[in-house]
Length: 174
Image 1 (cartoon, one colour):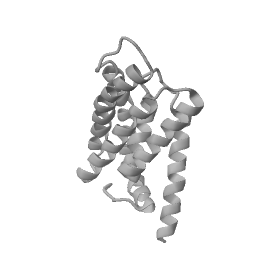
Image 2 (cartoon, rainbow, N blue to C red):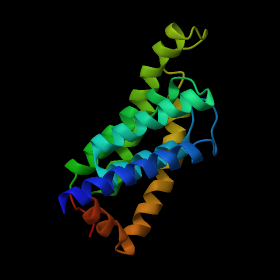
Image 3 (cartoon, rainbow, N blue to C red):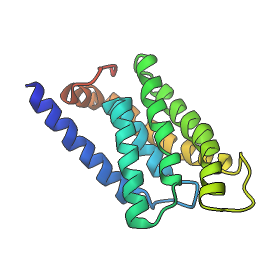
């Protein structure tokens, strides 16, 4: 039975990655990708922080490789995905905590980490340490709001708990 859950987790992870790559261009401008934050939070809640980190990393690499997206695809995702999963876990399943983790992890930490990569590695002139914070923060608010509404709807329909049970993760949904 445990082997079935591992296979299901890998299949679900692959689906999240594919969905993340496909929907990432929606509402996207450089430094703002709300749909990536939606995927990060949903993956963090359904699979935990480490799967969310893996999902965000793989989506970022695919987007950079196939779509020519700058390294913001990684710096703008990995911190938020991980922190979203950690805060969801430590809050014992509070959906708002997952959203706050994404907002802090991406909207603040990821935005600040993006500055040296874009300024020094890629040579973008005229940037400051806080250049990306407004865009990343706004993107996380949009994507986080959509994720929250989606996850609340899944909770009301008792689907969130069922998905968590099938994936074999910590079950916090009511």
